[in-house]
Length: 226
Image 1 (cartoon, rainbow, N blue to C red):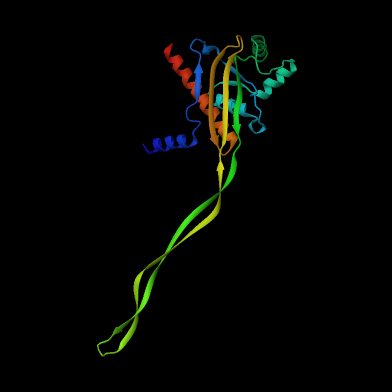
Image 2 (tube, rainbow, N blue to C red):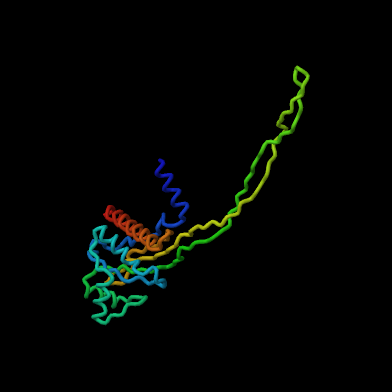
């Protein structure tokens, strides 16, 4: 129970990365999906270069045969095939024929905010107290007088201590990924997620793991229905 509460708290505090949004084709025959070609992701931020490699890692871990980006792009260059943005059915079929892949993983880094540190002034209010005494005289049995101190109250003093405090705002990353059949250019699965972490690539790694895991779960559900 304690672990569940802690996990829920982590998701709540990070805001993102807990519930990836995915849709899978209900009619596509995934039994024919043996090899996946991983394309370079569309990306406007140098810090997010290589995000597609994280998906390749988790696809391989899930048991899929993967043709990774560097090999794929090398072959496409050899055959003078340019890939940018929209992929026509003719282009996907040509890629499938040359590389022997059944589907392509295509994606984009949809949003990115780098981690940053901010400085704020923090005020701490302090209260100190000290006893207050007065001098008094007491007559002794023999008639003499003796002076002594007697507490008559407490004096309070207030002060405010202002100090600079530095804190870090995590990097925030959003990624959209989709699987495209090479014969028809049909999107057979698409997913998106956002995550935050002190490291942008850590956030991207979280997203890749979550989306691949979501895909494998949805695929298992489809296979159970057959």
